[in-house]
Every structure is written in structure tokens, then in C-alpha cells.
Amino acid sequence: MLSGCVAWPKELADFYRKEGCWAGETFGDMLRQRAMKYGERIAVTSRKRQLTYQELDRRADQLAAGLYQMGIRPKDRVVLQLPNQVEFFEVCFALFRLGALPVFSLPSHRFSEIRYFCEFSEAAAYIIADQHAGFDFRSLARQVKAAVPTLKHVIVTGEAEEFLSLEDLFIEPIELPIVRSSDIAFFQLSGGSTGVSKMIPRTHDEYIYSLRISAEICQLNQDSTYLAALPMAHNYPLSSPGVLGTLYAGGRVVLSESPSPDEAFPLIQQEKVTITALVPPLVWIWLDAASSRQYDLSSLQVLQVGGAKFSAEVAKRVQPVLGCKLQQVYGMAEGLVNYTRLDDPEEIVIHTQGRPMSPYDEIRIVDEEDREVEPGEVGELLTRGPYTIRGYYKAEAHNAKAFTSDGFYRTGDLVRMIPSGYLVVEGRVKDQINRGGEKIAAEEMENHLLAHPAVRDAAIVSMPDEFLGERSCAFIIPRDASLKATELRAFLRERGVAAFKIPDRIEFVDSFPKTPVGKINKRELRKRITEKLQASQKTTV
Image (cartoon, rainbow, N blue to C red; front, side, top):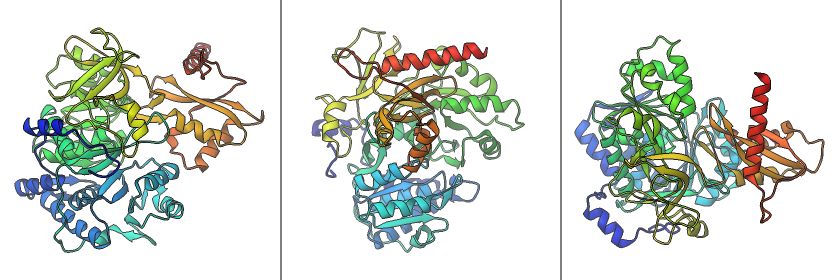
């Protein structure tokens, strides 16, 4: 096991293997077997290029050889920041074959996050696109390279300028080091409730198990066509069943550069897409656009919705407007995934967030004292199982809080279970804002704000939003009464903070309400901003 990772208890690992959950397969094995079985069938396609299963298998071998030749070795960490493009798969499977470990960052991350990921993971390389959505990632790479002297290589898809070109690294295959199914395959990033994202180690064994079960529940097969509309580095479009689950099933992945209906609807019509996944705010946009766009969406069989709580009223519109089944998905990059099933009654699909996908998933719903609540009552969800991690990477102190002594992960989600075993998500325990599926750690942003010399104190809370579910509101006690919200936002942008984390609203106050023990009373702050928004709406009406 890689140093800094928490090993699975031997008795549990033996049990999961005995039960057939862990089949001893690596991602390199998986692709090789699919290439042998599906050969010239298209695996991945975009507007610019496509790859068959055989081509993807061969390209992964060639790139793995090139990366090895340049000095990338098993267990080396490689920060990967690629949008939805075919090269994402070539890079991932090359690193899987080599035993090097991708760190899946998002296209929306900027200097503050990427520098941290490179430093914390001690990354050997950073792989980027040249440009995407109007942003030049090479400029970001220059900043990161200057700030992280231990970062050896920057590799670029497209115009590399002074960096290494990915295309130049494809060489004749060589014999590579042996990779075991129990090895760490890659790192994902947590939504994070404190500070920046934690790194989540996933093994070949447990992640491939999650793909297999997801593909079965979502009824994927070689005739399935999955549209990747969300950024693929997110766990949800990566594996639930996502792009990797589609490849596991022998289906075809279609890449969309953005989830906009203007981009996605033509692809659904042209490529005969059968399944795709969105977050709730995007569903609103698709539903509104469907009536004004003249595209044939009849091939679409399943629309998955996850990442944030989905309004029942909007959920009721999916099948009548888009003509496909709705499937609610509730999960986390740390492991547990819940689905509504495709044959569930409408009442379940509309009003719940699904039930655990594996019979080996264990869940507890507990109160603040870790006592299990009565059936139907709201409590914090705890979970463990064959694809839920046992600890974050290099986070011993945090792991002591985030996991129980017997290995249950504290999700921080408040849920209740209905008699059928399905879960209804009711909110969060942790100090985190879920902005349309993007998670914002309040502590991280408060620390950024406190770095401004004119800020005496800062507290960030969620505020209700009909479209995104939640937006962020920063309450600021200024040192200088002349401080303006525009100045603070410009300051955060200069610090390289991802745009989605910058507060949607800034309120200047003289003091914060306090709890009886002297802590900032964020519940009262949330109440204040909610009442202010409601009063404003009444005034406008």
C-alpha cells in the first residue's frame, strides 16, 4: 500500500474477494479484454476525433512507454487537468498501465487549488490542455511550475509551447512494471468541508466493482451510448456508471465540450445517445430549451440527475418533456452510490435519492451522539462497504474524525430512510455549500478572505437559490468601512481561486451572532440572509 494511504483490513479484503466483489482485475486488464472482445467498435468519440477499443488499447500502451521513458514510475502522482476530450482516456489508461497515479483535478480549478494538489501529492507531472473555454492552461502551468520546484514535467495536449507535447510521447510499447488489482489506481478529490479538497485514494479492485454494479443497475450494454456532458473528472460522470462504466459494458462514450443544450442536443440526435447525466440546475435549462429546440431526442432512454438535491416538482417534468426515464443518483467520491432503479414506481423516482447499489453496502443513520435514530427519522448517514474508502491520503488527524473506529465513513449528509430502504437527503451536517453540485468548503474561502488586510473577520454560509439549490453568502466584518464587495471579489480572483467558489453575495456587518459557547452562529446567519432574500422578493412582487 502506498505510504499515506489507509489499508483495507485483511479480513474485509478477504471477504470481498471471497464474495466476488473484488475480481482481481486492473484497469489495464479491463481495457485489454474489451479491446479483444469489441475490437473495431468505437469506444470514444468527440467532434474532433474518435478511437476504437483496439486503438485506445494500443495508444495506452504507446503512451505508457513514452511516460516511462521520460521517468514516470509506478506510484508517481500525476495531476491531470483535462476537459472532455479523447486524450483524457489515453492519458488515464496509460497511467493505469504504468501504475502511476492520476490526481483528477477539474477544469475549473485555478492556481490556488492546482498548486496545492501538486505540492501535497508531490506530483512528478502536470498534464493539461492548451486552452479550454477561453482559458489558457499553459499560463496557469507557468505559475504552478514557478511555485512548485519539485514538479518535473508539464505535458500539454494541443500547442505545447515551451512544455512537452503529449503527442510526442507515443512510442513503441515496452514491457511495463506489474500492476496489481489491490494497488491504488488514482486519486479523486473530496468536496471538502474544511480547507481545500482532501485526496481520495481508489484501488483497481474496488473501483472496478463499482463500475460493474453501476453498469448492471443502469442496464448498460454494448449498444449503450453515454453522453459525457459534465466534466469527466467528477466521480459521478466518471463512474456512476459514467464514462468508465460505459467502457466496462462495451458501450460508446460521446464527449460534449459543455452541457449546454446548444452543444448537447445536436450530439444526442446525431450520435443516438441513450443515457446521460446532469446536475439539477442543468435539468432546468434542458427542460426549458427542449420546447424551443427542434432536435430529435427520442434515442435518449435515461436521464440521470445527481450532485445536489433535486426538486420533486422539476423531477415530475423530466419524462413528459424529454421523453425519457429519470434516474436519481446520490453518491460521493469517497464511495457509496445510491440509485433509483429503472423499474421503480414514479413516487420513488420523484421523491427519493435512491438506495445503495450493492448488497454489501452497510449504512447507519445516527444522531449527534452516534446513536442510531428511529426508522424514518433524520440523522447523519454513515457508511462502509466494498467500494467506500477507509481513509483520505496523508490525513491521519482528519481521518480520526471522518471515520468511526470500526471503519464507517461519516458522510456529513442528513438523510432519512423510508420503509422501502430508499434514502431522502435532507441537508448537510458539515460546513459546506453545495452550489449546483459544486462543493465549497466554507473554511477554505474564509481563510482566503481573512488574508485581505481590510477584513477583520469572515463567515461564509449557504443561502437558498431556486436554480442552484444553494449559493454562497460571505458575511464580512471590515477593518475599513470603505471596503467594497467588488474589491474582495477581485482579490479572490488574483489569489487564483476557482470562480465557483467566489461568494455570490457579500454582506458587511458590525458583528457576528454567537452560540452559547462563543462560536459564530452560522445557523442565525443563514436565517438572516434567507429572511432578507424573502423580503426582497416580496418587495419586487
